[in-house]
Image (cartoon, rainbow, N blue to C red; front, top):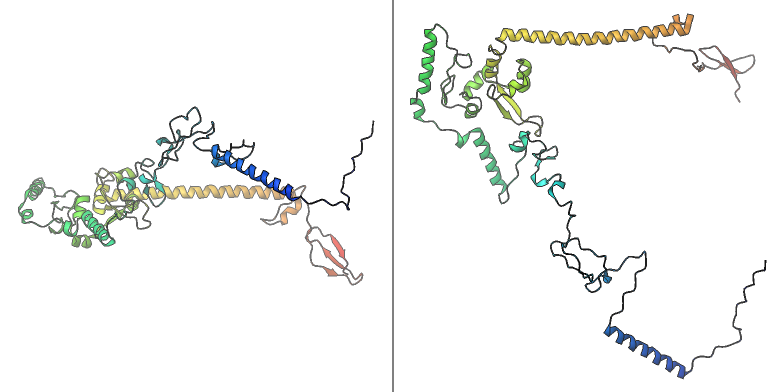
Length: 410
């Protein structure tokens, strides 16, 4: 193998050789050549622009390279429905339609939620399509109304008060008293005929709710007053004034749905039937975003609960209540006994394990002590160190196995 030729030595200028400066004639020629080249470049620029250099792979294309006269063939305009020309011409998009979604994602089925059609239920934004049976969403009771545009706060407050009075039929929306109501005796004539028929048969007139009171629309069933609560007249269908409501709370007090279900043993389908037991709705006092509170009239609840269709009287209701209470108590005691028997079984098993594993020493072990099994690793429990006067060393003893060790203190 031939050896590699060595690198020729570097040619260096001798330190003593001096370079002659250019002469005035050389300087003049260089300046003329520079000016000619500059004039030639300006003439070429005025005739035709410089060609865009070819992009280098891996570099970003400049925005100035994309114009109406020089458009890449791979350029696509998603906003325009027209195809680019064959020569790669640039198509100007619309002014107000520069950004467009993809064609497949522009349809309505890809939009899950439209916040303009949702209701703020204080627990999240939901639409009526999500829960069509929620009355709080389509009745307007479960949402807080917003002030309309162009209305002042004082006007909006007066509008809310007016709506509340109209809903409860109070103030200017309360039906007026008329003399025509006093002379119109159609209802009184019908009730008088019913009372006469009951007396002819030797029976006592009981009325609609079994208390012997006559139901005349527009009059109080207790004192025949015309100043009744029209809200109760519309909801419960009975005429009662405010004085009689406060005077007779045993008949005209309101019961919650829980009280009617637990005290009178009524079922949920019966309480939901408004023809059977009408109810009055009020905002929930605990939280405003919860469902409205349902209030039932005690007179109507007791009339249905004591009727032959349900329990047949207060005595039968008490018997059913005691029966259910007894069943619930027996079920609770049975559950307690089962847990107690299970505890006894586990206690007997633990005592049997202790006696079997520890043998004769198991008799001195108390309940709850750790059971020593075969293969368990013994851990010494050292007691207090004691000084041995003979050897001058301290000793400590294991309380469990009796092993003694000596310690030397330095």
